[in-house]
Image (cartoon, rainbow, N blue to C red; front, side, top):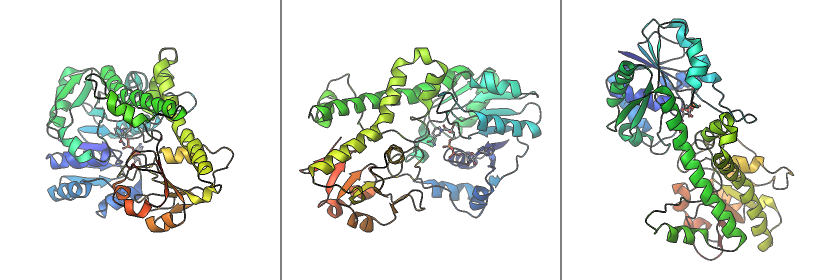
Length: 401
Ligand SMILES: NC(=O)c1ccc[n+]([C@@H]2O[C@H](COP(=O)([O-])OP(=O)(O)OC[C@H]3O[C@@H](n4cnc5c(N)ncnc54)[C@H](O)[C@@H]3O)[C@@H](O)[C@H]2O)c1
């Protein structure tokens, strides 16, 4: 059975490799020719623990090839981006639509098309089904893996398969059972679409609660971390950690789909997303206050540590640091310096690529991301003024959210 994985990004690449290692004949398709070239030269295209090993193992099986032209296959797995429209908050499913149109140009009847991309409930019915001009079966298999622990989660997470035809659902479930030892559940398409969006909404709303608590505590001089620690000793309370904002392409995006589609029914979700989105500006205000307290007036002496949206990964899409830099409407804080060990290219102004150089150029270090590197370099920053938005260090002169 030949499986084509369309879109070889953070989700598609590890998915295609895992499938090849499970014994399936896999074609990885991406319209980005440079990316395909890199993969064919044996280069992995992003940093992720265990990805290099999985890549080498998959290549050894000879079950996989990477191409930019669509090829005939029995099954297509579509893992292309699904952003949202910043104005309407609705899903932008144009990438999925375009990928499906390409598949339909070449596929035969009886082909199965599985959409792994996250989509809002009803998207497949409303946007994809009308495109279908052949006897093609549609299914949805939303992906749940977390960057930083993708390899483990690909092999152990449970999966949801949505299909309106039970037999097709079971066929797809059996393929995923080859790659994961987690439970694989078959349901209908709309339910599967909704579960994925709800999972990320659950996370977003809970993070927002902690972020709001951080603001209340900061306003009235209480220690939010001590409060959360004590509250979590209650048997039915499990507060998450507050942070400088929410980034990436899942938790900061997917809940907006519901707000866009059900604006009158999403008061809690909409408010939660706004709280999370307000955190980078809140951090910036705190930076100004900390500077004032310490007699600093030059933003050029302030450094943001971390540019990615979470620790130990190289994905900086929609990251809190980027949001913070974009939120300086008056350009007051324009000189802020930035460093991230995972971002090797220059992607923003005042970016450093060496930790020592970065630290030598600033007096106040704002820890935006808890990369292992900074945890292991306490000695290098201990003499700086530290604003630790991730609560990894404690002690006098260390500011927290
Ligand atoms: N990144 C995550 O952590 C994560 C986790 C769970 C679910 N998801 C979901 O998975 C989907 C993919 O996300 P991602 O992070 O892998 O995206 P990505 O941007 O890393 O990769 C998408 C890839 O698709 C390619 N592409 C786009 N349109 C194409 C087309 N028509 N034909 C061929 N290739 C095409 C792009 O060139 C790119 O390489 C999204 O819906 C996302 O919400 C992502």
